[in-house]
Length: 253
Image (cartoon, rainbow, N blue to C red):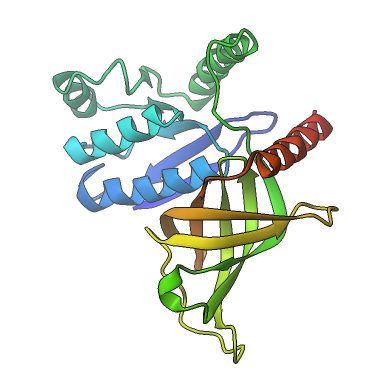
């Protein structure tokens, strides 16, 4: 399976064109899409339009993957559906959760989705719905210590690509022996607790310290990427991150 992702000019939508499905959104294909959606979510890409012209089948796992990310706050719309996919969604009773457009032309599907996003923004402005934390793209490094089982011998470094007061998305991860400086094997962080995460916000001399839990790990463009959720982050550090995020968002506007 290959996933081609791109954005149209002046659009917030991430458009996925899925090709080379041998069995459709089933089994391995569903798990590949799950990894891709995980990366999208931690990069703050929450409006996903999926062209499923080449997807002929979907099973319970594929439906579960789509429903899982929709419940996590992603806005996902399918278009170019075949009759078999439509039938499976109806049989599973998920057609009102996993929404689709009865369109084949991408420009019409994009227009319909953008109108929905505008209505969603209006709801956000009136406090009806919204993401729990705003996210912004970043480009600074962090250091972290592994769990206590490593006896403080192994530490790591990474590059933070995306940040919110809820957690971060990072890549360029290396682990090294604290005493010798020797690089050790590529770290396996998925499911691990991180004792100490340290980083400074751009232009700030203050160091933020947090604990975290790695909720997922994947590989993108030959690099390991991880999504880390903060644990018991102090109010002071939460406010620092929140203020930083708000400043970045205001500057973008």
